[in-house]
Figure (cartoon, each protein chain N blue to C red):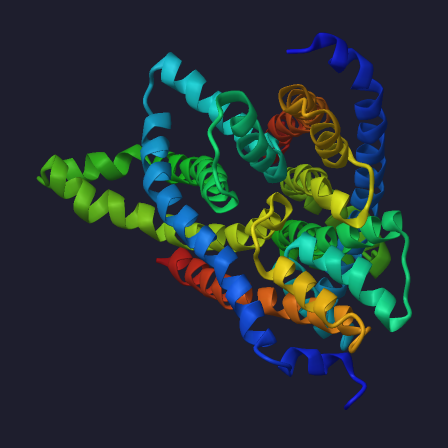
Length: 226
Length: 219
């Protein structure tokens, strides 16, 4: 046991530091997800408007954001904004901006898909049995949209958590950076700590995302039949 | 904008794009193979292998590629397993992509009705023939949109390979920013390079999807 690299985890508060690092990426992704849901719903509604200009604009936005690797977007905001406009953003703020932009695009597309998936006769039948427009939306349309949307939005959260690991590359001190610090600090006493630390991070991410994707899967199955 | 600078350093980006494309391609082909294998392991309910496949899918889908690469590149050498940068990149991409491809194939295979398989067996097809002539052609046409989306996703994921010291597009861009402080030019070329690589894939995917929609209705 003395010679195992895993003991580095229990030295000092190393494990707590790793968890703290993980929390930073999770916090970024939670903020980004919350913002993306709000903006995504707006964008999705905008995309169903039959105006050629809004259609073209939203399409370009969507395609550009989705086609670019998220890391490129991070570089654009983090390095590009600073150089071109003199706006100095910290790594975390630029990460929140980028992941909100990306999440909004993804969420917008999901909302649009859910909106157009409601067949027209749902609105018409609602009107035919004497519901007001407001009632049709509250009791018929929105519950159906939510049932389709919620599992997908939860899935987006896991994707967000996984993608926010990229913020290590623009200098945010998150779990991977903390890991590097710990490994460097113990380079002489525990030379093989890298294996254990990175292995631990692998499972930390796994146990952060796995329960969420299980919930999403269960909800998807449950509400499909409804 | 310094056009001279751009002209001078375009070759670097071309070189890096070539690397991105070749590793992406190898990774995609390997993950298609892995995905198909796993889909069939699950379809035929092979004991033991099936449980391993399920664990693998959950592990690979719920961890980021960046962390997988760190483990492969910085962690494993401490256990005496040293893999080159390219090796890590390909293994990482294949590990990540395999599960996504497997899910795509699985949903395709599941969409083929049980009756199809039973009818084929009743006609005297062997199991391998059933797979080859009845299940695969129908399953593939259903899973192609998902497969295309995964390919796009995998090529995008190659952008993290700079962390395992591969001179890919991100690496070149970061280098140029660091060396010459030509941020705008370097980033512009980066965006254009990725557009050149990724746009054709997504356009092709959209076209393919439209064609397949005809197939669904039997035209």
